[in-house]
Length: 185
View 1 (cartoon, rainbow, N blue to C red):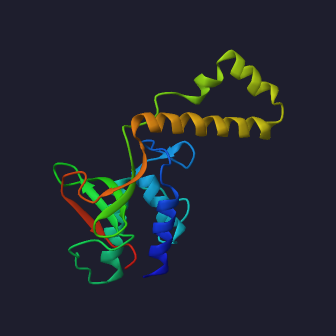
View 2: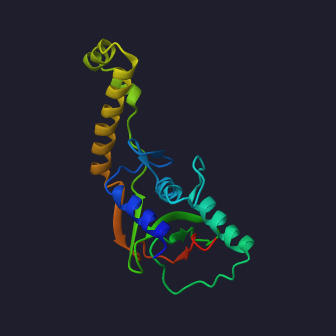
View 3: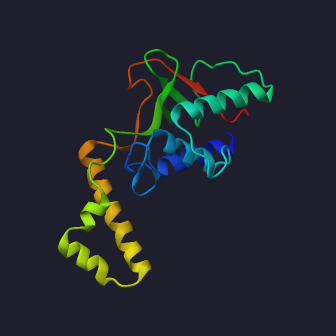
């Protein structure tokens, strides 16, 4: 197996149970489906660090890369480990969700019910918590406190909403999907 595929799978699995957050790309506050996929492909050198894509943007990038590479790409019947698996809108015109194939039966990805329903600034306005936060003094200590607080609150919210990175059967969404091999590019 291409070592880059192994890296993508290892990074994806290392993020199991990380919180899901729509539009997110932060490992503590949460990532959405494309944020998780982008992170995994960046770790393997498939995507440049600092790049950010929606599910549809990732689909178009991989599809365009295949077309421009001059590689004759034939859609395989089932994905290989590390392939990007896409689901589309009802019209079939836009990729709305992306996960990573673990094999031809299972995918790993971030999904859930949306963004957490609280704002860290609101929590920091609680008098005792705010006073404790301010009493930490040093900026690095305050930042560490806020980071830990975010981790606890976002993880708790993700567990209540069943919103995190998880492994599921490839057909769990019950709709048509396609997959692209970003390693061919």
